[in-house]
Length: 67
Image (cartoon, rainbow, N blue to C red; front, side, top):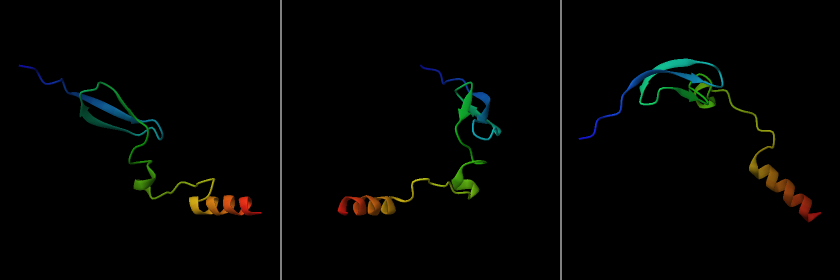
């Protein structure tokens, strides 16, 4: 028979905002890129896009090609 992997209590640290929380995991260390404290879907703060939306960029390319 095989044994189950060992579970550890680990501190998960967000590399974006520095928030931490404790969870159980088979990994001994965990680092997350974003968490619920800084993710735009949870905070309601949208990101700004420098290039504009896709339709606007397409229309600009179409206008340049036409004339």
